[in-house]
Image (cartoon, rainbow, N blue to C red; front, side, top):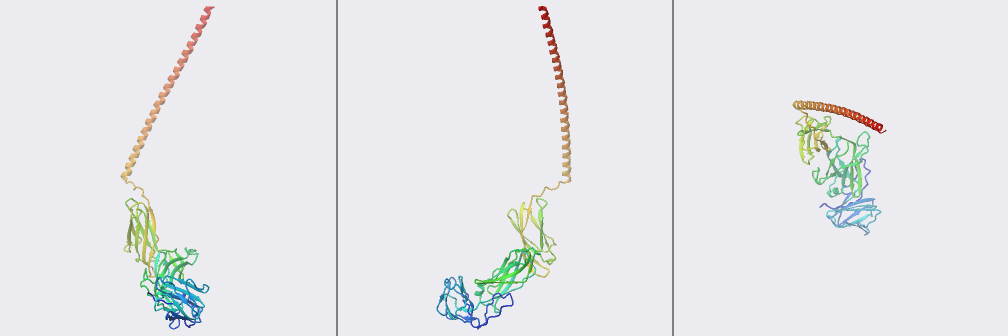
Length: 423
């Protein structure tokens, strides 16, 4: 367990405002002036103090502390004057800010940890290492920083646990860059917990692991230092985030059983020749995946064979390791690269196949011509037959008409002859 302590103040002169804008929080921790032991759960606040922040670390899960003023008045986390007291409680500490505290001996009641001390909390300095410039989109960046107390490293790990250090990239809103008008992006945080890129837990060396998943352009890195009751920001010089200096393209397979070719071309104006290493992974349309690597044993552009296992959507992810021409090693994750593989057209026919196709075409044309000639001949025969039948029909009709007229004439003569005999 970390030692419990509280912020308090003996006689001291307030320092002038810091000239360095990085001094966002300064904790005065000079021996004999800003740090006192809590003896018998008692500490003293002198009359010069206009504002004080007290921090008490206590046993995990215990109830918030009770503050007892010199006149015997008790303050609780749920019951205290809101106009001049701000109280924040968590599972293992209380942080209390008091405006114009009552001078004299104070007492604290609660399960505070032993060997407590009292300190004034006003400002803490955070000193980050410079950020390289330029940076690259998708880059994973490791940056270290330190918290100081009066120019000296803070030796109380419990207090370091209370502070949160976020890193935000804010667009410069320069219209000459692609990130003009984009929203601020939180890219990481500084930690001293021995996780991720932090090497040793609690050594006072904070390590930031930045994931630059931002649009290329001009940014101002901003460090946000916050406690439950205080938040400040520190800005660094502008940096440029450039596109990842590796061109990615694919040549699709021209046959069903051929391979696709992934081509990686480093920008030699940015990347030192021979320094590029790539670890990649291909997700196939059939949901299978395969890992692969590229090193500089071959010449650029570097080729990666992507087997054509199936038709559909391919997704390629890559981690890039390289050295830029300034000698800086960097690691970056490229944006996922995708392409669609459709079924390729059938292969071009051979000369023999083309000749056979031509022979079949000529035979088909000859057969068609013969069929048309036969059809025309049949049509001609039918025309002749129709003409003959028509002529026969006409002759028959003429003969019939002649016979009918002759018979009618004969009947008329008989009728006339019969009439004469009767008279």
